[in-house]
Image 1: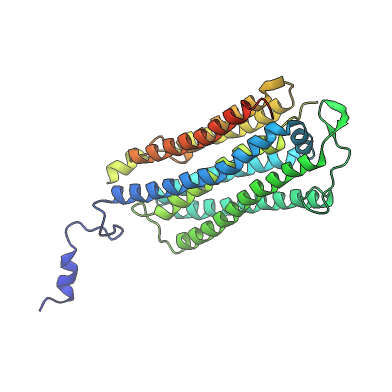
Image 2: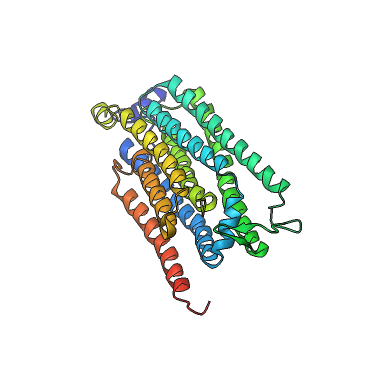
Amino acid sequence: MPDSSTATGLHTGAHNPALLHHFAEPEQQRDAASLGMWVFLATEVMFFGGLFCAYLVYRRWYFQDFAAASKTINMGYGATNTAVLICSSLTVVLAVWAAQTARRTLLITSLILTMILGLAFLGIKGIEYREKFVEHHVPGPSFSFEKVPIPGHPDQYANPRHAQIFFSLYFVMTGLHALHMIIGLGIFLWLLGMAWKGRFTPEWHTPVEIGGLYWHFVDIVWIYLFPLLYLIDRHP
Amino acid sequence: MSAHSSAATSSPLKGYFAVWIALLVGTGLTVYAATLDLAPYNAAVALGIATIKATLVALFFMHVWHAGEKLIKVVVISALFFLLLLLGLTMTDYAARLWS
């Protein structure tokens, strides 16, 4: 009777416990997972691309109103948040490297630092949104953008209806980006739990790599959002 | 396996920190360039720096440069191609509408 002693025998020969049955080797398994993530990111490029396209069309039509509206956003918050996200991308690559090289403490520290930086980003974003509510720059019935001069033309005022389109795009684009950050934080919380339990090994740490790809993508979106929304026509 | 992974990961840390510094410098440059009056080139400079930063993140942080699987590069390039198709064709349309 072939019993449990031979059941393990079925898998002797070259079976890596981290390798799923339908893959030939760990390399192939990793590449398949990364490729799947990249295909998802390609759909995300299209998703954000539509918004960037709408932004470009309206910016071209209402450039001066967009410039006036952009000038009312606090550039310091945007620049700080850019730096915060860039630092979080560094901690993410460190986490991936730590997982590859079996450094558990560095992995856990990097994941926690990434989450702290992600929360800092959202906190700064929240302060910025609050200011927009206080200033009545949130699109809707209480929106107000009266007598705001156009940069370079102090005698002309921006059209509030056109400025409202800028703020609609601002809130949709940064809001969608912030939603991605929140999802990213959820993913990293889960990664932290897995890392804490010691699930990741140099052979298998696919979730860290794939979660990292997602985080970097969200960083890249912000790299474009920052100059497009905050820096349209800033020079004095 | 071990030979392979040690070759792939022989301390990439220096590179990671160099990219990180470059990204921070790029952010500073973007902010500085925005305060200059470059007439029609302000947007081009800002987007140029952003594209360099995004490329650095993709190539080195997202490991496209060292990707073993060539299909990943195909996916990245096709995503960019269709994004440029969307933005490029839309903007040539609007740029050519003399009546609007």
